[in-house]
Amino acid sequence: MKKVEAIIRPEKFQSLRSKLSEIGIGGLTITEAAGTGKQKGEKGLFRGTTFQIQLLPKLKVEMVVDNDQVDEIVGIIIDACNTGQVGDGKIFIHPIEEVIRIRTKERGAKAVL
Image 1: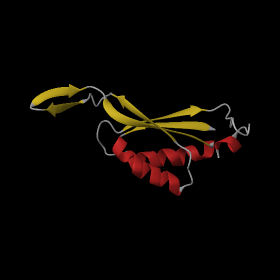
Image 2 (image 1 turned 45 degrees about the horizontal axis):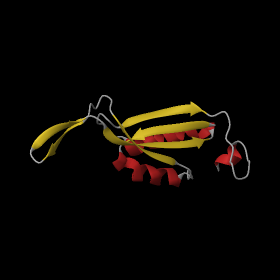
Image 3 (image 1 turned 30 degrees about the horizontal axis):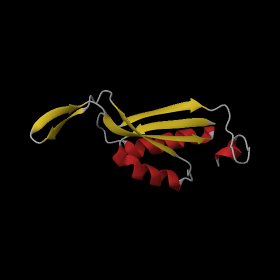
Image 4 (image 1 turned 135 degrees about the vertical axis):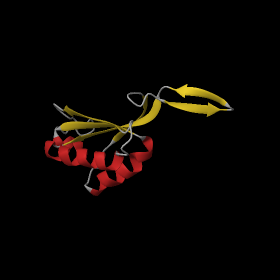
């Protein structure tokens, strides 16, 4: 199993969610985040005063999937979240050693579904 973690623009989440649902991915964890990278923030304007926003809002989307689903999910994330602009985000893939459902004590792939 692998954990796929994507840092994306918040406005792209609904599109991503719909596309993941179409292939049967129902379990996601979403965390609101803020960050900066090559995008370097942006300028804001408040009551006529310009200021620099250093950390931009992002969403972290996490899911644990079978190894054979990883490439398809990465493709979906890229298709749904790509604007072609700096700040589209990143995808991280981590190996998962074990998954245990607390309620039933199920282990492995059964615990993910």
